Image 1 (cartoon, rainbow, N blue to C red):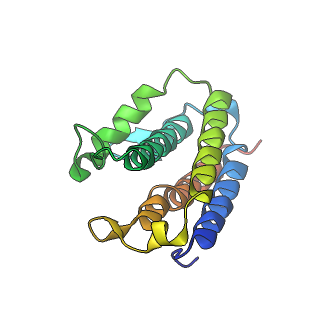
Image 2 (image 1 turned 90 degrees about the vertical axis):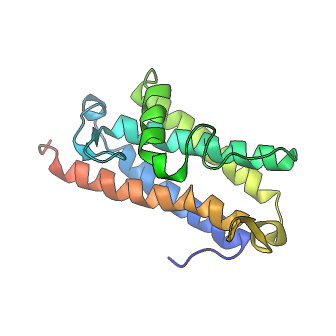
Image 3 (image 1 turned 60 degrees about the vertical axis):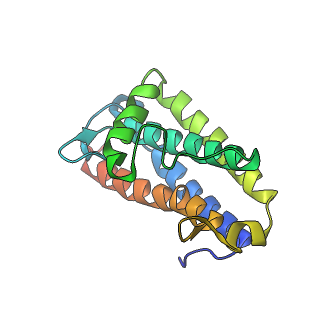
Length: 170
């Protein structure tokens, strides 16, 4: 899919990638949700499907925080206070820890709720706000949203599909 350049194409990319991801996440047997069998987000680590969901939850919350702070005229610490772009593996580990108390169904439900909030948030914005000017360095707000929602959904789907293929046949 081409990189979105309008609100409509951004919403379409998020919707399509999220629906496909959720279809595959729902195929993960709950008894395998905690199995660390996927390459983790930090070099030399592994993660479980649940931790992948926690990662997506963390980024969704962070993205909504960026948008809220921007709407309120407050400064944004990209990517997150206390982390640099070179520390994304450490940030991923934080997300795994932050949400580890969630059950598999709770994690999927929270991810779904956050995706709905993001879609609602984007729906109230104009094409000009999303794509008319840089928001962070050279990136527009729409591109930053895509890089932290639709793109990770597609990446996560590839990881989950590989995980599912490796499971014993049921």
